[in-house]
Image (cartoon, rainbow over all chains, first blue to last red):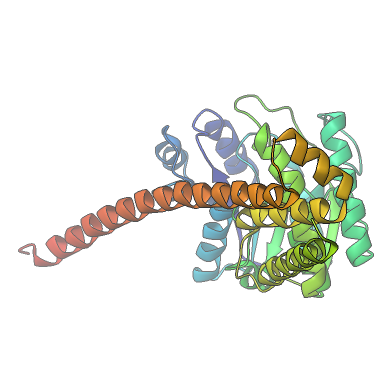
Length: 231
Length: 118
């Protein structure tokens, strides 16, 4: 199976060297694509220096926009699946090996790296944990499938899923709503434990007023996916 | 405000909410742009169905008629929607300008590359 690792990045020049070196050491044969979402720092240059492929947006399109560019790249270059992870070093690259094995062995369409199966590593703050649990319940109500971590960005997706997502991926927070849509569309979705690390540099993307918007947008989008009966 | 006026306001608001929901479902509208429309619908329904609240708000804003309160809130929301669009259009104009510039530079670079003497 031909895999590509996609890392959407916005002003992540400080985090990228450590992440890219670790990925190169652990998975030397898997190419890495850094999608620079209009960063103001040296993100694309640093990524290239550390051996990654890069695509740079000329303006900021949001987290979902970055992922979608990565999906388009993977589809146009004939990859069978993509592994996506955040650039902020919270997703431990060591978890990716077992994830790739499980994804191939179980012939999944989407594999989610869940922080709440083994509960190891960085502890998610209580408020955020409550929101995630709320989204798990909403997703379960719409799909009857229990997903422990519907907001995890650490995922592996097959090209079949990518074809459905391109053009339909929310530009801001592709989370539980996408999982609801994909589950209702009949895709085979699995979860596996991953270790989450503490963020060293930068801020979480959902904070302040965006957190309020997130609380409006996610339940609405989950309901819409249910109403559409799929993606 | 007569019950007929309140009923018509509530029905129109419900139709508005359904229409926004339908456009969202068909992906003709993004959730970001639906927020203010949904808020307008919900606030007007609450004011139309909860008479005591409508009178209280009418007193608070110093209006003579309850119907004026409805128009006041409808106008406030429509103003907010117009302002929101103005901001978004300004951002889009900036993006299109940048995109045009970048594309023009790339196109010219490709042309220059082609016409370069071997």
